[in-house]
Length: 146
Image 1: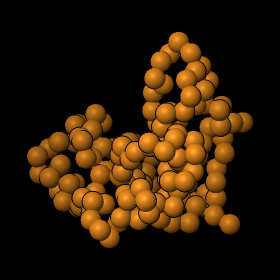
Image 2 (image 1 turned 120 degrees about the vertical axis):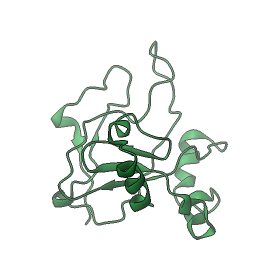
Image 3 (image 1 turned 30 degrees about the horizontal axis):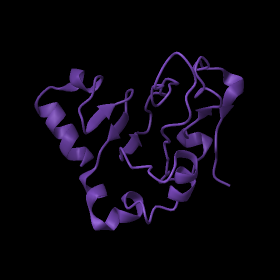
Image 4 (image 1 turned 90 degrees about the vertical axis):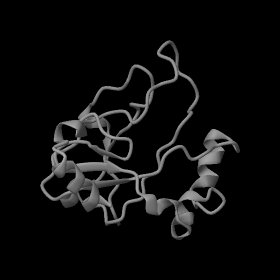
């Protein structure tokens, strides 16, 4: 899928469009791609998309409630030598007036061992609280493979 999309982007000279992104393909920095894959909608990937099979759903439902649903699924690809992504919150608050209860959860499933040499996802602890969305090095947590 990646090869098909990048071919189309090159053939149609759409490089400048990637910053804002397409519905199914977005560049998140040089060499870093966020994409939706049609294969995720096949039975082979029901362990990810069937909410009765996904092993993390009991935790998600405990936090969000039994009516939690899957809103988005995708893959993130970082090519060798890609730029570091800017620290950011993955979703906006429902209001900027006061802190509301949790309304969304991102579940990351790494397909490679998490090691510092491959630039694992880092989390800035506490930045999900309203008013604390700034980056601070002492708040970083980097989960690594055992």
